[in-house]
Image (cartoon, rainbow, N blue to C red):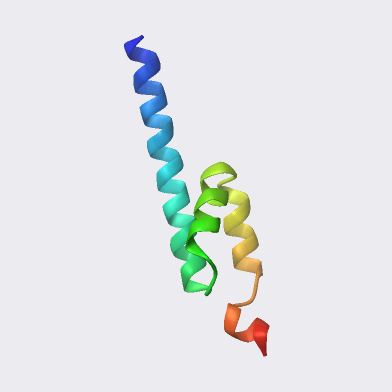
Length: 62
């Protein structure tokens, strides 16, 4: 039981860390932090790659 609790706690910590990293990168690009936090937590490397390929929000509106 303790091992399962520690595993879940560690997994949640990793998900939050990945989500924060993606959300911070999204904010630098001018995108929504909350949406990219969820996407980054669930599918970590893919949202970061997508954000790297997207132009910054200011250039996309011109």
